[in-house]
Length: 343
Image (cartoon, rainbow, N blue to C red; front, side, top):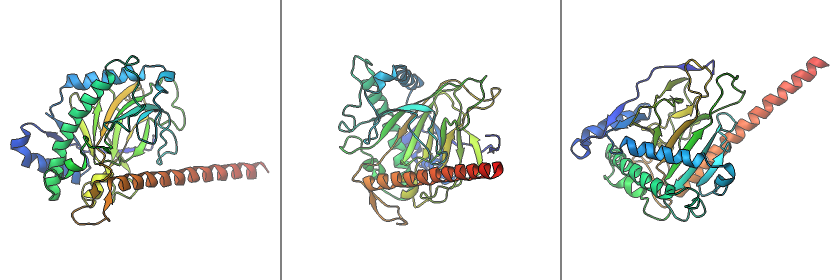
């Protein structure tokens, strides 16, 4: 982390107050943010701080359960369930040091993914209610982005209809493990390696004081893995929702809107970094599996929501295999140099 370069970019803060009467100005602000760094914060969005904190408390209740209880709902190919230290990023080749639990609206996707009610009373009902609140906010953003791209107002809302079978939208609860500021940071330790999201737009809920999120703009096409060389911290603030454009909207806009790489910084300096347990919640707006995706300029071939997700997963897998090969090659070269020096 010592070689990290930082710049103090300004993250736009956009109010959704009086949405219906201010929709044109809000649309202009959102489009400008999407065309810029692809990150922005929204305020006056209609979800009270008390509801956000209540869902954080529910997340803490879940993660405080013994691992043997959480293993009853393991992460599966349906993109739901609990994982711990299992997500490996192509940017690092190492597992993120966190645990997470993912929920969807679709009952088939959640079959066997909810803990029994007596294990976590009220958790399911509360989480689904919070997801619906996040969906309401998301749909306001979708209307604005549709207008910005010249589509009908309900174009993206219909493509992300969470009431339909095959909805893929996810709420992900995250818990990054506490670290000891007195101990050296272990080599290869990453809270969350650099990555871009695959979805349409992500709503990220953070707790004030639990810093670590950083962004690194620089992509020009959603298929690229390259990223820029300077990072900017995004500090959490009470009541704000930090939003970022995902690869889906970058593709749907013919690369006009930017899906930006971001990470959760591993703390290395006790004087400035946050070492405590870090909780966040990410609401990923994923397309319905049968919706059709193509930008107004038709830069990319038309695909379905299912096809887009499969292609995104393949790009991620291929990039991860390339990273693992590069790590193995470097290890082999280092071993060869040691053998040569000893002979």
